Image (cartoon, rainbow, N blue to C red; front, side, top):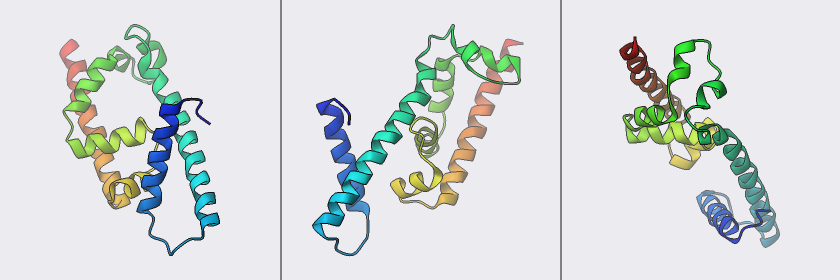
Length: 145
């Protein structure tokens, strides 16, 4: 599925972690095998989606304004470095949820399960991270004026 031994090892590790987190009654070997294949397949799909999302951030700063879709022209002037700096000012918990959602493409429920927190907590942390980024990046825009 991955054509890379390193990626295959990572997938196996991630699948094993997810299997260990599951709290289900004892499964037959056949059911466990099918579940493992399903988990690995979904991980491959998730990683492909995440890679596609992050292609935007791999563009040089000069190309970034053309790649960002925004209704306000001033937001195009923000570089990926400035975005990363603003994100680093968020709390570790808020930043982690933000990155899992936007960088890795996980849904609220997946983030909640992975971190062992409620979906409402995921929503709250994501909302705080967005607000922090708007505040930080908004200051950059007003400083330029």
